[in-house]
Amino acid sequence: MKRILIISCVFPPEPIVSAQLSLDVASELSKENSVVVLSPKPTRPENFIFEKINTVNSFEHIITGSYTYPKSKLTGRMHESYSFGKHCAAYISNNFKNISVIYLNSWPLLSQFLIIKTAKKYNLPCVTHVQDIYPESITNKLPFAKSLFYYLLLPIDKFVLRNSSVVLCISENMKNQLQSTRKIPSERFEVVANWQNEDSFIQYKKSKKERNSSNIKPFTFMYLGNNGPVAGVEFLIKSFYRAAIPDSQLIIAGSGSKTNDCKKMASNLEAKNIIFIPVPEGKVPETQDMADIMLLPVKKNGAMSSIPSKLPAYMFSAKPIIGSLDLESNTAQAITDANCGIVVEPENEDLLVKAMKDITSWDKKELIEKGLNGFNYAMEKFSRENNLKKIIEIISKVK
Image (cartoon, rainbow, N blue to C red; front, side, top):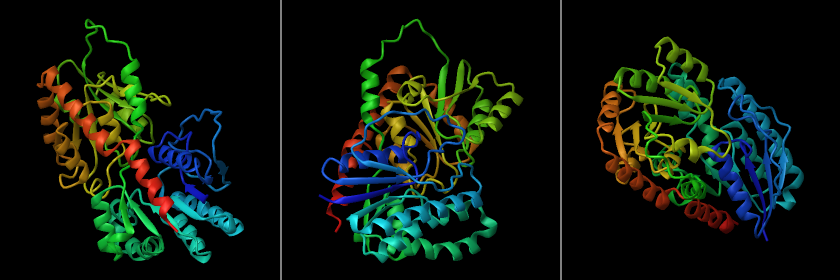
């Protein structure tokens, strides 16, 4: 029996895909191993109301007293990462004799550095899960300071990855970029897609009541997810308003720091067919079932290294997808390979407007067919069953 330490920067009840991923890993590993989970107090997304959930876990869960900062300001996020790293490093130092391997799914870059440095000190193997590439993600948002941030932060990420026993990547593009820029042997990497729990979508589909055929509703476009600075929801609002499609509506489902700004934009446009709704815990399948088309905007260069967690969720709802994102990305390739929608280049309002208009001309049979194409593709590529098994095998083999 291994003694496994799981360090996760997000964890349920936070309704974040990465949080559920860590819970799945902890639950599965604890069937045959002794597992301890370290995570900060829940704060994501900002302003979300966390209801206390009484669950009995097969592992020990320790909530650190580290500083938290759910806003998107860089200085606050860096403080949060450093504080969480310090708390986790202290735990490792005090308990290293009771740890066989560490699974690390934490904030970049400071928390990762402190944890890996401490693990190295005690010769503890570490499986590091990379959700996004840093410092590149920072430098893309702050081009005026790109050279400085790259010079200061890249060595930290190189240290983290070079001293990890295994580096888990969520896409082939991510693996290729990290391998070439960090000069790490290919055999150190494993590609495992982030998953959604397909069971919740399948069970909803089985249990939902047949819709009344007389229940006519507007043709519905939907964005579901965190409405933050990089989500590009304002772009969706402008494009949908400009498309002026008769008898249609746009639903923005979820919350985030940009929600109020988006509501003001819709109000200023006097667009009464743009609706904002919350997504209750566990109600993603039900909410997405309201849509005819799911919208997946990603800003330029934002999709090149990872696959957004929204993609498998959209596919499991068997809805066609319009992706406005990098055409060379794995996300665009997935939509194309699945034959489940339309892909246009990012931040191009003309092309998105045209895609919205074109897709409304598809008949019901074609919409259903495209949605099922996406569902079948997701079952093969993004299912919890297949990808969780891969991670468990990887962690179990590390010595």
